[in-house]
Image (tube, rainbow, N blue to C red; front, side, top):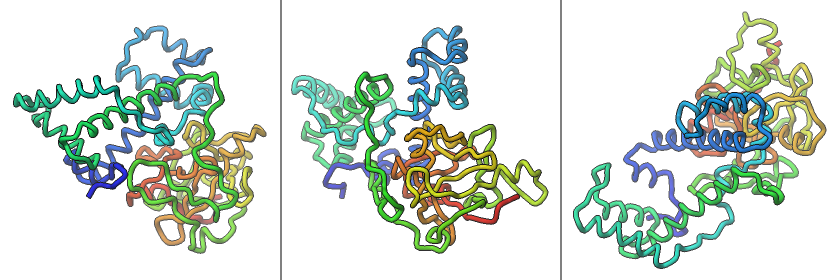
Length: 362
């Protein structure tokens, strides 16, 4: 039975799309990544004044969106501190609808839209995918947990779409008002953080503090973090950005140093952790990309550079949850880049955010 509150579960999404749950999870993650990239690009392009390098790159752009220009601009934004900073205050995508009540469409517009869909179905018309239009209405209604015959299903679906579009537009523009605070209060200690991720699915709550010896014992000093699902790779850096990198006995001193991080009490909360490299830079998230920067003394930097230990997917492993974005974890993506991503309940996701603390590589 569909959830009584109208939430769409991952299983229902997979069934509606005709995909396996694993394939659906991959599709959802890719869409999230593209959405985050697109929002950062829109913010960078609309910021005034623009980054000088970005402005120079846009001189030959005709202003029409295209996959080619999206890739070009995204490549620049990912590696430009100024552009990343301009997007650092964007609301997390999964929180865009948090706290917003659904507002029904005007009766005339809702009736017009529903009437066109039902008319197409009764005339035997088919969609481009080959299914009947009436069947599409029924599927949406079933996913919303309401009878297909009632117009409230289509009205609610349309309200969700319009609300999401409006909030997304607002989030990607500079507002003269104050920025929205994080969706949940920051925890005062690891044991106090039990905030559920703001997702519209049946995802499990944020894991409780780890009971295994690795995460329960207080860490300090230099260590290395080995990936659980890529055991030959370690949390490292390249050009100031966080990556997974292979480190072995024959690796150069520079490679081994890059994979060695010093655990210190959290800058924003001494009950959590901050991690430093040999140059004294801190591991932090910036527009959700993991990077290493010098402490600028700001409150936002201290929060960005603070992570709380949680249990990992394997015995003796841990995960690092963001202090100021509860429910987001430091993890690696398929291209080995380190990001701060929202929690998911899949086995692959849990493994990608889990690390084993080992002796320093130096």
